[in-house]
Amino acid sequence: MKNNKFEFGDFVIIIDEKDRIKMLQLKEGGRYSCQYGYIDHQDIVGLEDGSVVKTNRQKKLKVFSPTYIDYVMNLKRKAQIVYPKDSAIILMWADIYPGLNVLEAGIGQGALSIAILRALAGEGTLTTYEVREDFIDLAKKTIDDFLHNVDNHNIYCGNIYDGFEGVYDRIILDLPEPWHVIKHCKEGLVSGGIIVSYVPTILQAKSFVDELRISGFFDQIETFEVIKRPWRIEGMSVRPEMWFYNHSAFLIKARKLNF
Ligand SMILES: C[S@@+](CC[C@H](N)C(=O)[O-])C[C@H]1O[C@@H](n2cnc3c(N)ncnc32)[C@H](O)[C@@H]1O
Image (cartoon, rainbow, N blue to C red; front, side, top):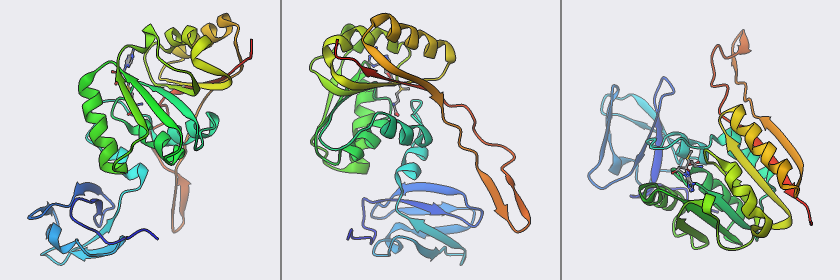
């Protein structure tokens, strides 16, 4: 069983009386202040995950270790991430499991990379192409802070539209013009392999699907979006939430034929 007592260096989420969430990293000498007072990081160290602490003003705060969703949704956003409702589906539709060699582009903040690396569970590899060095640096830190010492992730700085090295079992794309990658799949994706693309607009989805068909070596093409509809259940108030984020992106999945 995992040690579930907090230590310096751990990320935690702190939830206040109004269910507002703040994520922070426990540091020696650190102090968390909010409208309910403050608590020193030192007073959280040694407590068990899920503990309730009190601020100097005797207000209760709940402290948990962040789940994947907490972590990626509370990152300071520098790039648009794949939302967890979508990354969960990507893992299933791309059928990612330990031992596969997976290619991904681009890295952004590394949110999807973390989900893929977790699904690989240390077996197989994730190779990520990204054009921007600043995103590579940012993502490396984001991934390492959450997963610690991953040794099966290879990151290359380059434009994947120009091609990529190697042959992969799965290719996952979160890029503006993913159709430029399809021609490289002739050599770079195994037959029976799966490609998944994540695009925000339906015009991008159409361009990608058109190119999959033109290539002649993709089949089992599916296009869909994932809508998560939260409900409020409080006493007699039992109804869908009045507002929620609806559209994030379209997902296109296809399978390579042995041509
Ligand atoms: C939306 S972000 C990816 C977010 C990432 N999937 C996540 O969940 O954090 C898109 C990324 O693709 C990169 N990119 C755009 N065009 C590219 C290309 N031709 N080759 C490689 N990376 C590219 C961008 O620099 C950016 O980092």
